[in-house]
Amino acid sequence: MSLSNTHLGPERLGQLLRDCRTVHFIGAGGVSMCSLAEIALREGLRVTGSDRTDSERLGRLRRLGADIHIGHSAEWIRGADAVIYTVAIGEENPEYLAARQAGLPLISRADYLGYLMLRYRTRIGVAGMNGKSTTTAMCAQILLAGGDPTVLCGAELPSLGGACCRIGEGREQMVFEACEYRDSFLDFNPTLAVLLNIGMDHVDYFHSMEQLRTSFLRFAERTGPEGCVLANAEDPELMRALEPYRGRLCTFGTGRTADFRAAEVTARRGCRQFVFCRKEEPVCRISLRQPGGFQVVNALAAASAAFLSGASPQEIAQGLSSFCGVHRRMEYRGSLNGAAVYDDYAHHPTAIRATLAGARELGFRRVLCAYQPHTYSRTAGLFREFARAFDDCDRVYFADIYAARERNESGVSSRRLAEAVGRHAVYCGALPDLADRLCSDAGPGDLLLIMGAGDIEDLFGLLPLRKPQASEPDR
Image (cartoon, rainbow, N blue to C red):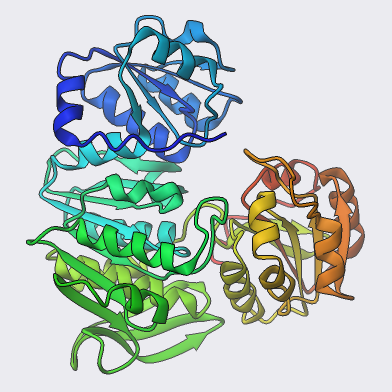
């Protein structure tokens, strides 16, 4: 069973951490956890940590001075003054149990981040079911054009040398991804809450749209009386959630009623250009390098948030025109038998549909998709939506479901999903079998999109890819 957030509050956390010298991170290889561990190291704390498997993120922490262990054991918490954990671990985790038995402060990842961010004057939190990482990264790119922000993103950023965080020297600005899973974002304290969209997801925790709307409203209200909420005016569920909100509300969208809008939207090889406006007043022209109409929403949200935080028109235009994407968000990885191969993290029906639509705009002969469903609960709870999500590809190949933290209690399977999708779907099962089928089917003129949030990245080690050349950075 996964753990819940502790919701200790900043005052209580300050008391617990006042004399702390050594902090242990359970699950230190997670995207957010490794960022928090890096902040702790930069503040002079001794950091230890553990995770199930090794990774480049853990290697980075080692290079910065952390003592990292692979596997979980009660021994690893010896000498720790406090333990930070991610809610993805189970209650049976030996380090968690040992810390509780020893009476050590046990602090959830979200609580710790909420505590740390109060040191910054401007705190931009990006929330939504889809687009959080890209919008956070876009906003960071704009702020970097004119300042020294701290950045905490849920994905690795090429612009940060492959890191998912950046620690600024000052305490002026922080931009961070605010994850809604198990209401983690209700521990955060944004001064500007950027709300992208609401849709049914994390069905092991959220059981209704009403519950989701309530959570997003509560996150909006965490901006306080002096804060601001920036919301997508064209997401009806989001605007419905904000009806009771009484604080400062700004909106973005393509309609003329939005406070910030995209006008004169055009496309070239799937990539959009538009005029960023405040009401009817043009601010700057923006050119994007990633395909898909949904990128307009992400860029518009980032530009609006940066504008409200003091960025100049030049910084907004420069930041977005130089934005080269996020790891595993429509990332070009090379070619297979002449087919262009892209990698994407999408694992929700809405994101899958949007990504496939963007891929279709690139003009390839066929769009092929290799997909690994993520968790039994999401696949079962959104089964009908998944069955319709692949209409925009010519063929979809299914790997077995990535279980993550779950057991299969519903009987759902990738084979059943492939049958529901229809004639253009192929069930492949294990990753080696999927690799063999892709090597057989992919050819010149095809775009092959490898998609999912589990261990489907391991597929790249099974494919004889021709790596990207220096002459093709913008495929």
